[in-house]
Image (tube, rainbow, N blue to C red):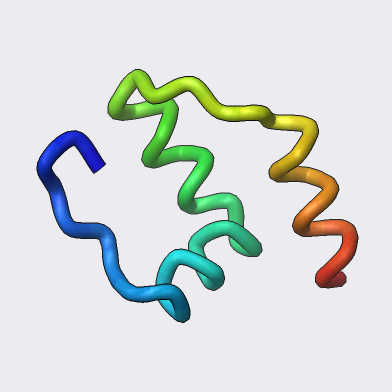
Length: 45
């Protein structure tokens, strides 16, 4: 992510479900679809 290693699939999945990945995107100024991120979390609840 902008030259920084985030982690493997398991780490990115956990970060997505916890909302931590959203925070990292926002901190790095990376655009993402917030609605899609919420749908992913809802589907995995």
